[in-house]
Image 1 (cartoon, rainbow, N blue to C red):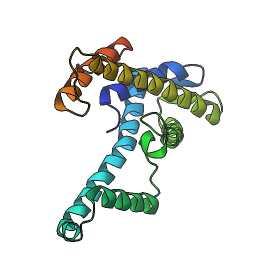
Image 2 (image 1 turned 135 degrees about the horizontal axis):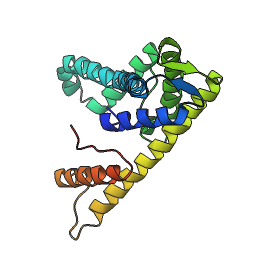
Image 3 (image 1 turned 60 degrees about the vertical axis):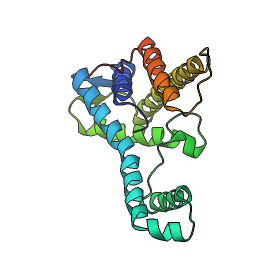
Image 4 (image 1 turned 135 degrees about the vertical axis):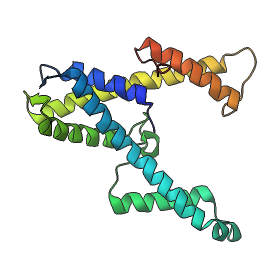
Length: 196
């Protein structure tokens, strides 16, 4: 998944704080946060399931691809794009759509619409402002947290690059150090990736 579960939980709590009580009245903020978190996880894991499906399809054609010297990554991209078009799936990865953040703007907008549906159906939420105003506030909350997360990711990578000896990006050592520094930086914005 593009975002760690702990970050999604943090995002959900931040969204609750942001919209309660001005935009949406929330009976039990803890339950509301769980509902938001579950919906976001479901949305983001849809593309993971699609990737798994593409891998299964490519396994069936492994010999054909090898015999005809067809690149796995090219075929993966083609099949995934075809399935996305057929199923009208909105890409989650911002980097696949040209956005600088981990999540695409289209996916954030899609999630905001789906959250409004969750709010309308759940007894925990009572809308107090027009739906579009609430949705735009949700999008702002998403964007702010994702921009902060992007800064954290860059800071963690910079820390690894500034080590006394050169560590090659992409190496196992680089990834291990980057994850450690990322967790340290995330703690500074209130997200504890180490907790169970």
